[in-house]
Length: 388
Ligand SMILES: [Zn+2]
Ligand SMILES: [Zn+2]
Image (tube, rainbow, N blue to C red; front, top):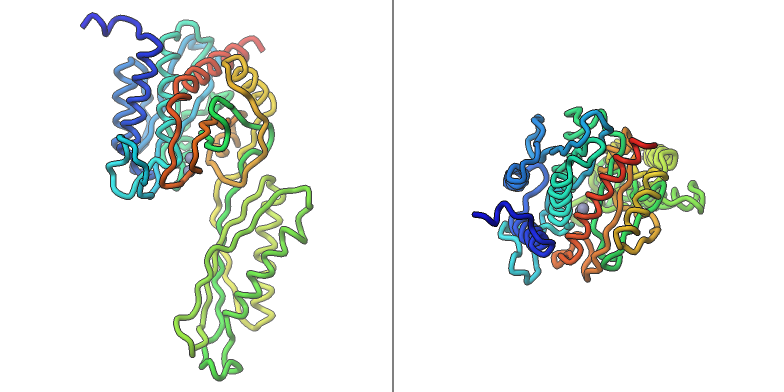
């Protein structure tokens, strides 16, 4: 009874955070279905007397800690969703939700940022402004960033900070870079309409398989022939479906894949070339191609001032800092960066399996340090915005 009023020791706080993460890990939920996760976050925030903003969100939430209410506003963002993967770890707290796993470490992000919220709340009278703390749903699939942005909750936010754990960085390292950091992610689909025929009389049809093969080969010339060798881009055709037997030429072929780019102009050029090549080749073979793109998040682009700032705070917080090369994976953190300057950082966990692997783990030893880092970063950023 009395203990509740006493401030926690660092060791107690660390133990509490580790227990919270294990709980999130045990009950993972898919994108846009994070109901129990949201309820748990809400409960923990309310127990710490942290304000939760009233927003029309199905899952996820935004909390707020304010010192000087007339001061600047910044935001910290984490993601809370899991993946449709059957967990294959031997952890005592492994997922109990069949076929769903926190294989990207969003349980770690959620807990670290919750920890930052607790620390900021303890220190709220010293804050030069307001920190909005975003627990974003649906990062993996669903573009949860847009749900948050649509609420208008970030309109006054002047800087935004986000994180991802990185198994390939050593434990205790913080890596990021100024400028493009993660890629824009686009998906393309191409439906080729030819004309079916007996396999013995191809001259009576228009074979979509031959056309699809030409298109696949041609798409692989875009990066090598249309993009500067100093730029970075990638095209992968990941599905080619046509026909269902050995003696019939089918009528249609379907292919799809992904484009990853770091610059807006490269992205536009590649999408234009995919359209030109596919429809041009189909026309040349007397067929037609229907091409569609689903717009994914654009590239994560780190503001140079806030990147330097994040590195400086990291060094002062005992992290080893590392400027790391860009990656061609995607992150909808970029949606926030379209409106708000900010920086996305990687926290090294030095764990053996990559993101999205069924044996993926994070290292709890970096949880407390990450929570402290984001609390200090937020406090320092408010100070920086106040004093210029
Ligand atoms: Zn992921
Ligand atoms: Zn992730």
